[in-house]
Length: 450
Image 1: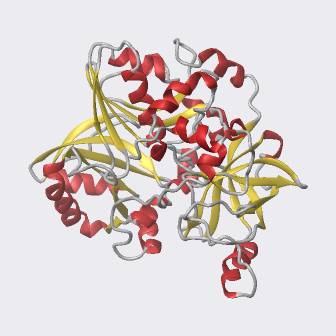
Image 2 (image 1 turned 90 degrees about the vertical axis):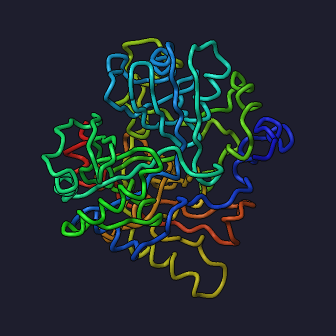
Image 3 (image 1 turned 180 degrees about the vertical axis):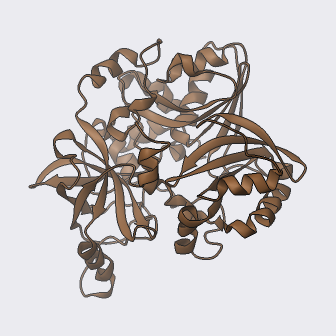
């Protein structure tokens, strides 16, 4: 924390774009072991056997309890009011007064008027502010992520993903796996510990999310590894985990729409260190050009107009004018090779491409061109060894969203920003082909089917 508000930083520097584009913040990494073996083999585990991913450290838990808890989340979320049921989770989506996206996270309905929201700061900060500034009869307990929290997490959270996940659950529990529908919750016993379980899916594969008190974390993990050995269970480190969303199609950190005049009080409340950073070739002096609607990145399935919520009227207008849609872009292998190889040549190289995840700002925004005209933004980028493909998740004009359409992604910044993640480099154009999102066939036909 800097004890400087986002609004004061904007007042000093003159614009939100300049604050975010030149933000001084370390590159964000999942605060877990980078690799247990190597990230290529670890990526293969969620396709061939079973990946064990540690989700305990990189998101905040917001525990919200009280008579107004359900009422509050119904008001702040676009999700159907009929979907709030104990024992179920949902992908909570929030928008601002003008119907533009704030963020999304997973909301666990633990008990009557008791919730746990697991989310990145874009949504967790928004929820905390609206509770603290409103007249809601609730209590809020925040357990932040491990990069800023002092001490251990309140809960462990593990993910089992891959074709052998079901078999491992049955071996660990000694009984048939609980028959849970997608995003329904239950309870199992692992090594003598009571463990919550959510039927889940990510990385393009089916699986389960497990959670419980932090004091049980080591024992549960040891039991999973022991019983899962015969099924090829593979611990996955931060590098592999950070790329898992590229196959399942989830955009982890779209730019939040928090810069309208009506939200000045929120920006005065929000520490500038939590505001994030903009990076990439898409550059506009108008911060609203970075705004997205839920429909732009495939979150429309979490929108229902069956209740009153913040931004409803504006979002209804967006729903009638869906200009962009989410796609996967498959980057041209020869152009990627040239960009990677430029660090070995003469002259100024292209922006360095980190593998497997190549995003270098919290809000990655790269320009997509068609015949020289901007037709969208590439938002999250990296390499999947299972596909032997370099991909990005993008939002693109509907007229150019057909599978097989050829476009160009501009990689690198012009001019180079002052972010510490950015070295002196030159922009390059990389050809790309539009593909479905999710890219994984299982995710398209299974848990993320429309």
